[in-house]
Amino acid sequence: MLSSTGRYFYANSRIHNLSSLSKTISIILFIIITLINNNLAFQGALFILLFTLMLMSDIPMKNYFKQLVVILPFLIFLAIFYYFFKLSWIDYAVIQNKIILILFYSSLLIYTTTPSDLASGIEKILLPLKLFGIKTNSFSMMITLSLRFIPLLFEQTIKLMKILALRGLDFHNSKIKEKIRILKQIMKPIFIHSIKDADKIANLMEIRLYNPKHSKTNYKNKKWTILDYFIVGVHLLILASLFLKGVIPSIDIL
Image (cartoon, rainbow, N blue to C red; front, side, top):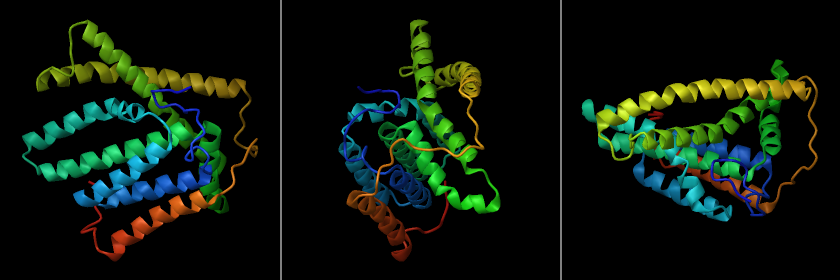
């Protein structure tokens, strides 16, 4: 059984069977690598690594590419911005690749990790913060809920675009000015629906007597395997190579 909108995909792949801690560490390292690297050739290597992991997940590739609909309005707006201000299109390509890489890797994590395992992995990463009196349970739950909102936003965007298409507003075949007008019509209802969904989730958690002060237990803990060490090691080696070989001319996120 699968979901094409960014929810957990039930499968028995090698990526699914990885420890939630190793996947959490890997995505943090990957995001750091993606943000500090401004080299197009190296971004190509990151795409190869990412596509390899996506193939290992046994999830149809179309599921990942459907996630691009979520960021398509932003990419179009960014392209318009670069066009009017006559900025470098190479810089635009670098930024676009960064966004897509992070989106695909986040989708990989959400598809192959249950919400409870994801919260457990984040909580383990944040354990040192307890020394400073920070409640890691609440913080990990906040991050998990934020990630779970991605498929909700995706569904709402698809529905709204279909509704606008039925009314004669074809986003994909419209001119730039028309696309901007359509985006304005989409953003407001998406924001309103997001607030309502957040309120519903808060009520459900209250009904189920969720208490962040109590320690959380896990029904099943996945142990680290050789593959966990290998994947985390690959990410660490990539990050180290960036600094050792001087691939990064400057540490600029954009």
